[in-house]
Amino acid sequence: MDPAQDHPDNPFGMDEDCRNCPNLCDARTSVVHGYGDVGADFLFVGGRPGSGADRTGIPFTGDDAGCRLQRILGDLELSNSPPDADRPELDGAYCTYLTRCRHPDRDPTDEEITTCDPYLTADLRMINPEIIVPVGTLALRGVAVEHTTRNPEELDADDLHATTIRGRGFELVPMRALEDQTDEETEAFVEYFAESVLGRDYRQTKGRSGAHD
Image (cartoon, rainbow, N blue to C red; front, side, top):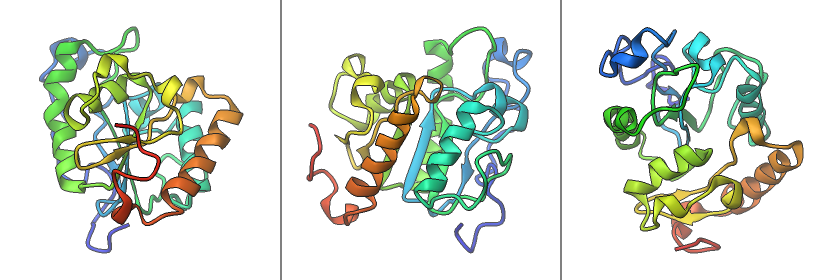
């Protein structure tokens, strides 16, 4: 974690009682803002908080899907905590969401995604990562709108799992939704990320080696 950083949870002091989406205020338990290392090179972004994150208030924690991502981060040496930690110690990674509140019965609406976009935009500007990992198709399409030249509706995280997409100022390395991943797909992502991202000087080769337009 950045030595100048006081704490990893909501380090930029975003509104923890946000009421911009009235239909979510009574449905949620927590407003789940970003968490992790503010000096991170790698930003992992999901579509919406899972049931565990809604309970803990920490992205990608508290349930099986969260444990899967935390295990991935540990395998990549981006976490120093066990996969089931509610407050993982991240080093070089920052976790956040396209939308910050969970409705237990449905995905976020387009209006809710638009309303929440300033939070993600602020995360990206403050972190300024080298690599964005959209977790699931909802996150991939949401990030692609502003940060790639691709048609978002044509992008599918299942098809693009463990590949690289050239972005505007970033590279995107999509991941299939955690709850849908097999152990083999998780292993494939770890191997790809270790070899194709951590295994090269991505700061110098950004937008080239193996990237899709």
